[in-house]
Image (tube, rainbow, N blue to C red; front, top):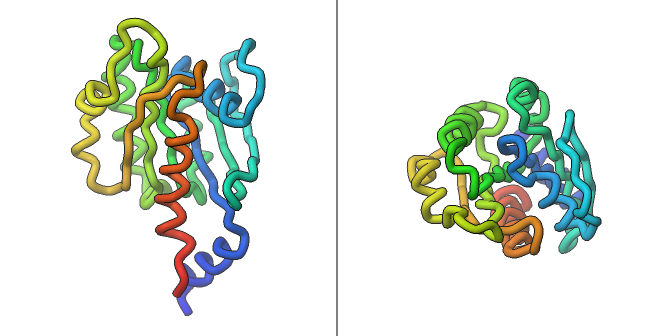
Length: 184
């Protein structure tokens, strides 16, 4: 029995997933996590470091790691890659001027060996704001169709209204579960 098989069996028993939430600063990462977990979102401060939240959801134990996105913190992102099952990349759909930076950061992440095989969910956030780009426009800007190394999905969402947050989490959990919790 190989090490990978043993690890899969251990995860099978625990039904535990590690989800890393990344994106540029002010994309809405913390707001998404708080809204999904039913917390008050009226006061959100920039994340200076990271937040960890563990939730029981659909018979899974989800460990969310929400890491600050300020330029000065991005070099530390790699410290959180280990054992990541899914990457939730949050995009501010109303911030057109930083889409190139957003694309560059995402594509650099996807080259990281410790994120190989992680499922990618892209949340095109802030759909409640006027002038925000659609998921299709974000997909083109970020050149998501070029990604062949990861299972990925993009969804429009709003951290404020909660639109599509559950659909996104359901998708990423389902994709991860189909890879990890297999019976040998």
